[in-house]
Image (cartoon, one colour):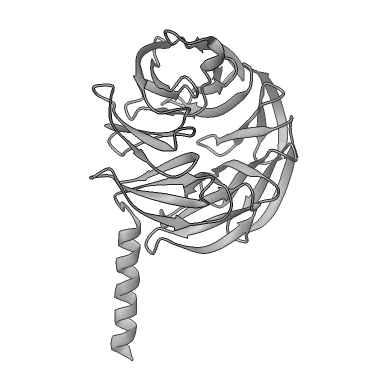
Length: 322
């Protein structure tokens, strides 16, 4: 019996070790109701994980052993064990959850509820809803400040960023930005919050201290109309000097110098460049393309696309685990 118990402990430890740094990219596929697995060394698809209906945004939970997947058509989150690559549980999230962020201590999830026009807060320990904050129509992007005191939420219809006090769950300010704001990224020092404006062909930059827009970065792609430049996903380089912005239907990723707020490079990728993620050292940028059903891997040093591979129908989010 003791040997069996010891074997079980060793097995659990082994699985836990393999759960981290799996060497995979996980890509949610809205139409396939699955997560596609991509080997980061070979850049080849090595499997899929069935999940709930219309998986969209994903994040690793505290401890990096599970992946939380928001499924809009199921109204819940699927919890995927990264060691076994299987669903190990779920949590109700209400109607049409899309994007979420986690509290710094990993105990709460802040989820945009598009149909309800609200930010819903869930306890990740009890898997129960803690509260709800009414917002403008069609809230989408969500990000939590590093200290956990504020939650920022975009409202696509109101063209605003709502600033929510995480302690009181009250809106402390509404900030007007560009047309149809979507996603966020903080600057390296946390003083600026960059917001993509999908129908404004731009990014608004918010001063976190003043809670006001201090600059706008417009985008221009030769041969394309402004209406075709629809930025959504963005992520900051590891050195904090470059903001990578997916330009949606413009089928490019823009490299924006954070200091000068100027575009320095444009990289051609797939159709409707959407979700973005970097590997650990920042040498590769992974771009999911929602209308060409693929993902482009970009070498950030040379600003060149290395490979584009099919990753399921309507990919939404990529999480890199290296």
